[in-house]
Length: 255
Image 1 (tube, rainbow, N blue to C red):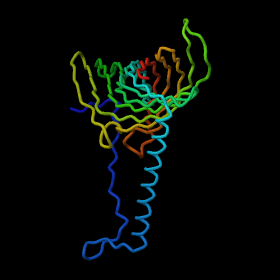
Image 2 (spheres, helix red, strand yellow):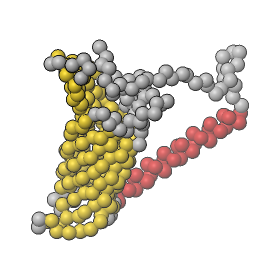
Image 3 (cartoon, rainbow, N blue to C red):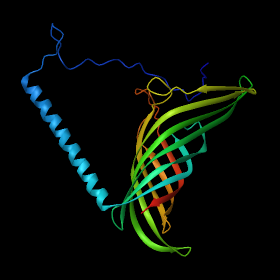
Image 4 (cartoon, one colour):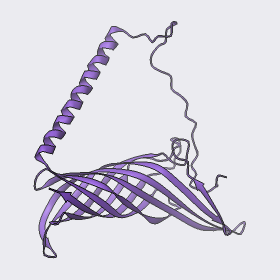
């Protein structure tokens, strides 16, 4: 049974769009020689860009020092859904660290991130005691650039203070809504996607500061700024964006 709590957003009925090609009587799309030539040029351009991209990555890798590592930390999500109070989640996953030079490195990662929201309220009109919690699970893929701000001594070890900035992509894989009405508990699986409570894909920008010790240990205080409106109803005035404060520890291993 679907709960009538405020988190549920109205779902818009999306109509299909007509194709651009004109279909002839024999069922084949009419294409001129010019359009076919343009398609061939586009394919060649894409292949050239792909080859160039691989070449740049290969050159960067051969000149870079690579380290592999693990990351774990706490995540405090914020959301434009202001009627929900917040609780902390966690992050865990793996990262790769490409040191390009003494001042610059690139650190992509793949993390499992748990977001939690909760609300407790009393229905004074009906006298019901209601509490609810919402938990969402994400696959989080950040690509961070680290730039060295300064060198200093921290607890007897040579350390660096780094500026962290970079984009991230997150994909919601599952979610649960737990409700308790007058002591009776109910659990509902959250439906995600364009026909659900919220969209699954999120894109944003991450910023932060990193303490990098000479032992290849990193402590980071970061903040994610969600740029995607997660409300599946594109015609609604209600905006739903994820923001989050994180504290993570990264342990790097490698050459």
